[in-house]
Length: 279
Image 1: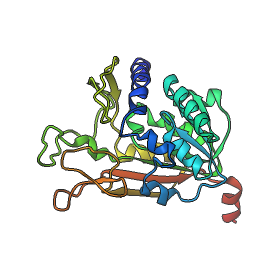
Image 2 (image 1 turned 180 degrees about the horizontal axis):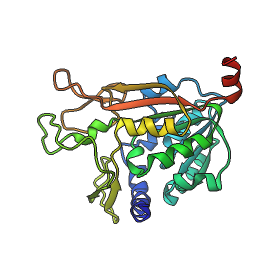
Image 3 (image 1 turned 60 degrees about the vertical axis):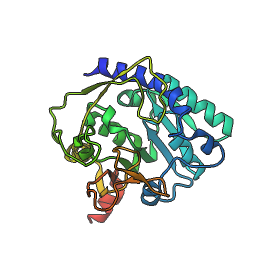
Image 4 (image 1 turned 30 degrees about the vertical axis):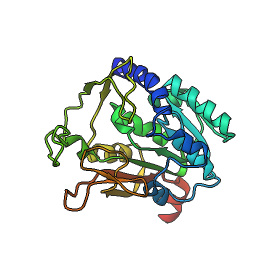
């Protein structure tokens, strides 16, 4: 289902990768000099990853993946864009950062990759590109070892309701609950600061309420550890937003108090521990 839309998106990401690689938003030069693409929110919540096997789903060209590797994780990144994966591999080789990158659609990953991980990670701006979260959650569960944890940090679904055509105030215009159909967008540029035009302009995205995100993971057999909502964002989503010194974006005091991001941690139960604790 939605194979055609996913194919359109893949072509878009192939074209967007070189634009993003050269953009100030991704700051690859800063990363080359030892910087990180990770923000305080995920660093604080996921904590120490040293020596742990980490699978990054929808990794784009690998900046977050390689940032986790620099913090000691044994990393594998997955993305469906051939251009993104090729760029990630080149960057890892250039900087001598140990990492593995796999080109695969998330939904078909279990057909080509059978390993299990201590951590499965999904970062900012990922879930809106997935039409079916039930299938996604099953892939997450299959990729975890018993006792392993899943962590996701992404835009809060309420952000999809903001009317971005109103620059001087925050108005909620669109529906929170949708019918599951994709939203088509035709834009000459990507979401970065680059004004370099794209050959592939069309994308399809899907809005998912928090109940759908959490419910899909619970249905796949994971157990929820926490669900947090935050007023800290990760990009300039509205003209009123301002960037903080720590890299997060937020609305100024007195403007509005909406959740800009959510974060969730869940784990795959260890059967032996479950049996032992029930005795």
